[in-house]
Amino acid sequence: MRVFVIRQRDRTDFGDRTDMQFSSPSLRRVDAGGLCSGCGACALAAPEKIKMHLTRSGYLRPVQSAQLADGEEAAIRSACPGLSLSLSSDGRTDSVLWGPYVSMKTGYAVSDHVRQQGSSGGGITAVAIHLLKTGQVDAIIQTGADSAIPNANAAVVSTTVDEVVRAAGSRYAPSAPLAGLGPLLDGDRTYAFVGKPCDAAALRAMARTDPRIDAKIPWILSFFCAGVPSLRGSDRVIEALGSTPADTAAFRYRGNGWPGRATATAHDGTERSMTYHDSWGNILSRHLQHRCKVCADGTGNFADLVCADAWECDEDGYPLFEEADGISLFVARTAKGAALLAEAEAADSVKLREFDVSTLASMQPGQTKRRRALFARMLALRLTLKPVPSYRGLSVTAAARQNDLRSNLVNFLGMVRRSLKTRLSGRNFE
Ligand SMILES: Cc1cc2nc3c(=O)[nH]c(=O)nc-3n(C[C@H](O)[C@H](O)[C@H](O)COP(=O)(O)OP(=O)(O)OC[C@H]3O[C@@H](n4cnc5c(N)ncnc54)[C@H](O)[C@@H]3O)c2cc1C
Ligand code: SF4
Ligand code: SF4
Image (cartoon, rainbow, N blue to C red; front, side, top):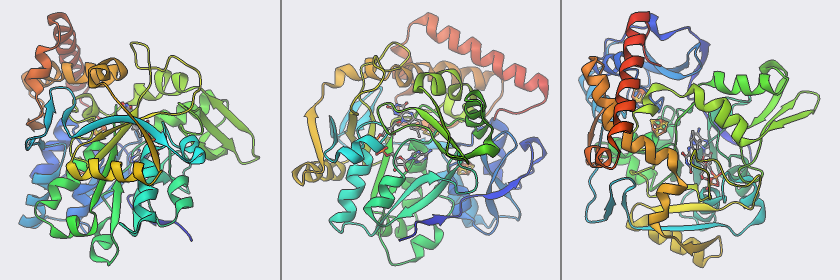
């Protein structure tokens, strides 16, 4: 069966965002702070008036074409992760760095093929296949390669095991999976949604006022997220491999091993690849959007179940091995998510092991450093009169107290410098 691709963006490359005008006060504030994560929730709230476009800088951003109705404006105000996130632990174990959770385990997909194709242990893919095979959902909403631009992303709706596996693997480029959900919410089928933590947060927030979401999307799966690089990041990876985006027929960021190599396949079938350390560490991580630098939810607090890389790593977060059999960390955020994981284990879809949560900070140094630096970065932005998201229930000050004074100061001064530089250049954060 053909994978149905949800339209999430217009293909027009309309140029830099400084030219853009928003009559929506919410979108204006997000734009002024460079706070858009590119989730597409605003386009879902007002599909006829807001479309996601790929900017010249390589990010997915909204463009508004007509005045919003009060209800549309209110829906964006309460769902947009660039404006706010509000979390309640509701009696779950609540960790300052890792948020509320019900259980944490490590494990991997029992199917060797799924484990190999997945980014880490194929955990998300294995659980998604389990949901599909047991008839708990009709399809999986996930993110795969864009057929026209191989290093860009498209939201896909997978209804077969092969399709779910085809969309396995992390894709370090912008995705706006919420933008095209409208028709799915009006249809008869049920779905599991896989997306970035900010996508999951926005979807959860929209579900508070739109009953179709809980009815049609009973499962939200996510992954730890260090940030989304611009599409220009992977253009640079392709160039560093000695090719060009135009010569590239297919592009894989990771997977097919652990961590898996970034691999560009040319139209003549030639494959060129580089290590995760070289692709993410030397290129992609230098193209992250601004919102990700002040993200309080890189670990999927609003999802039912979240996966991450459960590797032993150096202090910068790179694995201490070249390639290995993948292992995922599984964080069940809700009782429902924990029950699903137990069910997938009982059905022999995943193998699980106990996990010592006290080792997570050394396993995820990037997430740890960002959470601890967040207060200092946001203070710098406030003092330089830049809008910041409002975070409730995300332990921002408690995390800062875990940081030493020097790190807080370095992060504060670094963000002041970035903010003033941006202001002086007359440009905005991106
Ligand atoms: C931008 C980004 C940043 C990440 N940062 C971290 C990090 O800091 N720490 C860490 O441990 N892991 C991070 N990961 C996730 C990690 O690489 C693995 O995806 C995670 O361990 C899950 O592995 P898995 O084998 O269980 O997932 P898989 O079985 O490979 O499934 C991955 C799922 O994610 C979906 N997906 C892939 N890319 C995107 C995208 N851009 N937007 C929406 N959905 C997508 C796929 O469609 C698939 O359904 C990041 C991934 C991305 C895309
Ligand atoms: S973060 Fe999401 S909801 Fe907010 S402006 Fe960007 S795309 Fe729209
Ligand atoms: S780092 Fe945060 S804001 Fe950025 S893409 Fe990931 S979850 Fe969204």
